[in-house]
Image 1 (tube, rainbow, N blue to C red):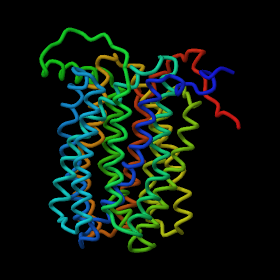
Image 2: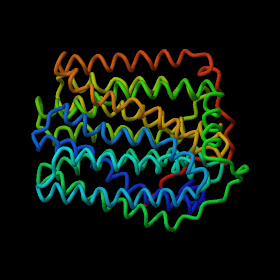
Image 3: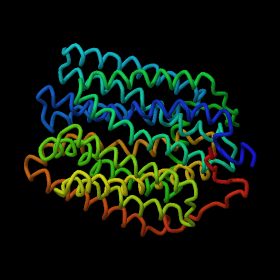
Length: 417
């Protein structure tokens, strides 16, 4: 067996460089949400305060995503990602210093979260567009599964590290690790040499934005899925991120319990990424909506009152479902959209996932105070599940079929000792 057959997408140098840097950066990304949550709580913040800080990061992210998508198609995507990484390294360093020095205030956390969200808005569309430039077409699905694997493996390591660091020292130390991870990512990006793509005639920023919008609205399956993701991110995700730590603090052992629950989700997501290497549904978008049901069940599971280990195991199933969903979705998107427009189109996808998040994060705290944490968490799960099933029934979603896979798109095997 050749090296190419054994390692598949990782045998291709350019993709391997990107993937290696993201492995490190993703660990830092999974540390920050837990560290930030308990940083707010350590400042005597409430669930509403935490929601406001998270919302502060999602507002500029939502506003600038569409701008970032257009510029990622106009410029060198690698350079856009480098600038974003270096900017976020500086932001996280400032946050870590404030927390470690006990100088941080809630408004400063919110401001830095807003700056961080703005920088991330340029990274995500560029990264989605860059992957097809680094990998051979027949290995695109495999590459997307490996990207998901790097993110999901970080969900296992990151939350556990964050929980231990917060419990043993402070949230500031955990944030400092995230700052360093962006520098590692930037170092690997410097070594990446993407293949050039054929771009159309350069027009104005507004015209290119409109072209991206038309690419979305002309595909009903794409527009309907973006709406489905919007519902999930607006309704379900705030119940997990904001109320999950509150339940852990109230009913379990605080940061360490929440770290194990989040790590269980990540472990399931890793398994899901491995399954995604072989998962090729005939109707990929229908499969995505049904897998979304598993993700939407999370808030109700967290609020169930079961043991930490029972919740951890069930969240692992949710993690596997979402991991398979995103690998399938990214591959379908890259196969169906013109490479020169992929960052713009993906920016609308990302925009849909974050545009409603600020509202959800702001409202979830007051709603939990009014109706009770447990009742709100069960309700948001039911809304998310209902919408996912409804989306699966749409004719344009059911009508999209999987593209034929090239015979050389083989699954890599792990080398034996």
